[in-house]
Picture 1 (cartoon, rainbow, N blue to C red):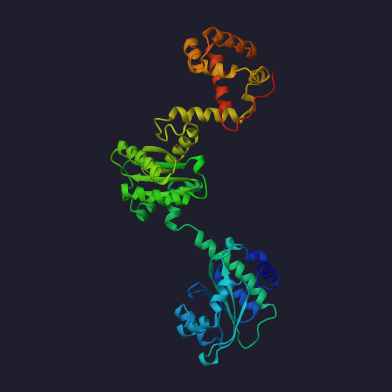
Picture 2: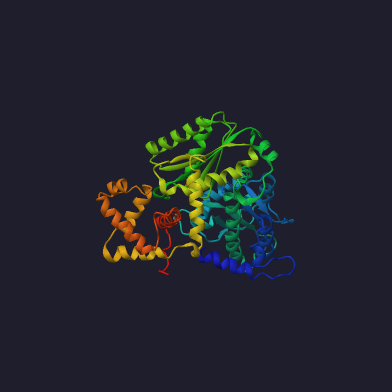
Length: 439
């Protein structure tokens, strides 16, 4: 916010609370609208207010009295200013100044057109405060009546401009009713969705199998050059080409597609794989995708979205292998990932004995951890594990005995092997905590 905005907000906050005027806290309330703002500015700055968009269309206005000039009457009745006066304002350079300055502009009366003096200030998007070319959202006009403007009218207008910018931008940035309905269909917000309303609004089949596909950019693609919104636009076009009744939404950093009434799970998987490959080849977008099908009906879409999220969360480490997967194909990875999540979240389930193994490797420049992980991956087959490590089988046998001594485990016992595999898998996860000190 510019200094002039801050000064204006300060002026607004100093208005007397006489029952007709709100203080700063009320102005900041979520239910404040442009009409209320116009009335407050008129009361405290003196005169009559209209709030207009960049095309001089009236968005809101305060109450008028007998001193309202022809411009104000015609603007409110026609929802836009008369062309003759707009031409005069352009000739005077008023619109250029509104685009290029935050200051309040004093527009003189025009007797030939029967138009009185005005003060006007531009409205800008609050996110563009430091931009070279901020977005102009409109202007606030204050017409003088029988009495002169109050001494702090300019400060009041500057503060009102900042507030109007927030109100208008909030409206522009808010998703449409249809977009909100789609997001709720996918389970956003946690509120139950009225399926009948979705069916009517989106013209979707209420029953019959559907498919939900989730897409996520890989970590290397998470950049401002490829934002989720831009990816959502691309996928919305591709999905609509595949099925005209498809529904697409962006939630967080992922894009979700609903394919209602699909006829073949194989066709959905083939389309998803082809799409991921094409976007990588033609647009250099590295994507992962997870598919849930069949989804029984629209009421189960939110649960299906939660399932595909579980898949993407659990298979991130396997990229680029398995970049497109289904729930059935990744069930093991999903459940194992959640087991590791549970173990990782509870320090009491971390085996402190692993610290001794890691310390041994570090002090002796050894590779006992790699050796035992390969041994476990080969299901205890010494010859295969030794071949993978490119060491003699007897060397590996010695290392395994050394691991057993350090850990106090018997790797011939299936329970010890299972526990060690879980603990080592936990340590391989990103951002894993190191094991505690030896007991």
